[in-house]
Length: 216
Figure 1 (tube, rainbow, N blue to C red):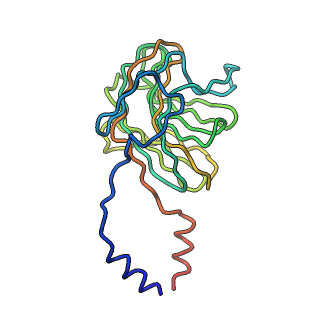
Figure 2: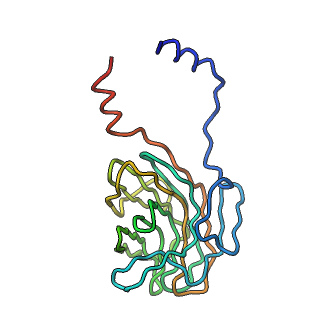
Figure 3: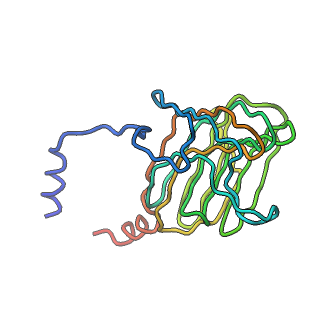
């Protein structure tokens, strides 16, 4: 039976895989202005917006624009980020979100006149980690890899050499919204552009090992 099924699948016409279709994604907190051109998304970031829960500052906000698609299982997500950051806490990058109490946002954040690689991990309350850069950067690539109950966040300046900036726990086996976000908590907004957003499915690690150990 398995042999017949494989033979039937082999006869079907091959459809080459393509990148994510930006037009088919969804907004959470849609900004007043945004535009899609090819594989690029540009947004006018909503003034006074952010995503943060409770810790340190004592407030909870969840009103930053986030353009996403939903995926299950394990994956690799990647996007190129550029922005004309203007004031303290202007930020843009990649967001991975289960719900309003469980999410990761990672990218560039402009703080006190300097560019920082920034990651916020939220499980009911938020934390914040930064890597200060010694110079302005025109663009940054952010990559996230979800395996089992962990998400690894990487950055690159050239989309070739990647460096880890965070390893964070995130509950496994739950669907996740993956996409592009930006926020301007202290400012009047700015323009952010996201290029080449792509999510690649990774076969489930535990299942792959089980199949390997239980091969016919």
